[in-house]
Image 1 (cartoon, rainbow, N blue to C red):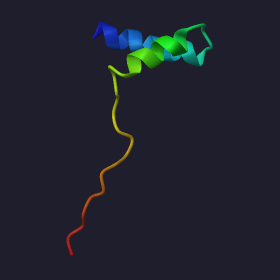
Image 2 (image 1 turned 60 degrees about the vertical axis):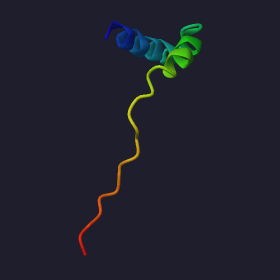
Image 3 (image 1 turned 90 degrees about the horizontal axis):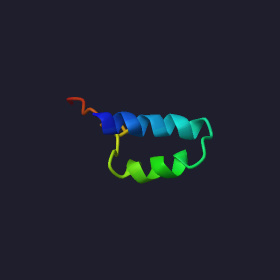
Length: 46
């Protein structure tokens, strides 16, 4: 849980322009892929 919080903090630091925060965030992104932004289509009955 702490690791995920650190990952979130690096994302925020990268947004604020902190030096090297973007690099650290990119390295951690492989471990935390996140949720898909695509919604699955729901099939309607005919």
